[in-house]
Length: 125
Image (tube, rainbow, N blue to C red):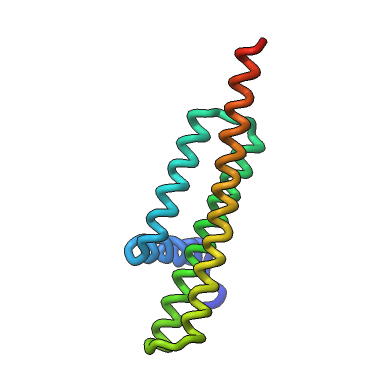
């Protein structure tokens, strides 16, 4: 699998997205939220810096969700029985997704505050 062409490697990545979409409800939910973020950007039309922040945050959430799903799948395959250590590892993975999701929520709140302030400033002038 080493030294494949760029198009082959992109194909593997797209296949990974498709697998996550088919198997993981959490991934579909995160994609839905990313779509909502894009819609908010299109409606609010904030400065380019906000586009970058939101895009990066969405990409991080989706990437971490993919990593979480892949590792949980591998763990379940290699160690299907219940084990307290495996549970702790899977909980830590879920905690990582929760951490970046909270950061994404903070970005959404900051964008909303920015938008409300800019609207209020327009009315004052």
